[in-house]
Image (tube, rainbow, N blue to C red):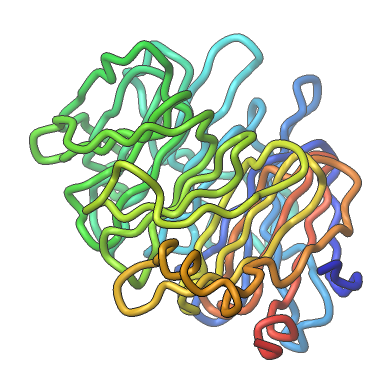
Length: 350
């Protein structure tokens, strides 16, 4: 279904691919976005949705050194966030803090809490502890996972443990299980690999094809979703990892990112290099999705694609739900355009 253009737009000055929900801001619907300019000073935008839900405005604008390849807001402190950045040759990662009186300063500067030094390879992402306030976070590069202990007050981060992937292909990303904080999933070119962070040892391996993104279902244990370049979207039950429990067609070009809704069961967003965002609604039943039942009763099968948002002119690499208003999502296309949409009209029809 092609959706009418109803999104609220906001433009960044440069190209960009990273946007994050500010989960810790419980008073406002707020997002952080970072730019990706090799030649210019990059920027982090603190973007807020007006109380009327009709306008996006810049709540804070901050300079950031180097291209931003990954940006995640701290889930328990709205002024803290992490970035992975590059100067075109080398990669780094750091934890930053927005100054307390940033709204009253002429040119507020980000405060670097600490760098996450120790990576030799290309850093891919930072994962924050998924459940409540905690000092642990994980950094992932193409070959290694590092578990860190962060002390923001002392501005230090110490490596607690580390493990090498030991795989023929490089790691491309990952996600931390909100139901089991001892489990982390990492994406590879041809597989999805789970780690037990207590022993930093591999547990489950799932064969996939060109995995670009993974997200855990926030309400159901054992269920996660992957976005795969050409084969679309796969939903997995970790108790039966040999084959996906459901497959969605994805996008007309590469499917790049997938996000499960934090509140609405079975509501999934995906985005890709075809310049569209797709909204899916899958029936998970009492335990999981049953592809067999769909085969047996084709007359009851319902198209899971409930809307397509195409108000974009470039590939979409950034996608996030709002934790505060879970019917709202923000997307970021490579040309620096942020669009915020409400899925209420689409979900209410179902």
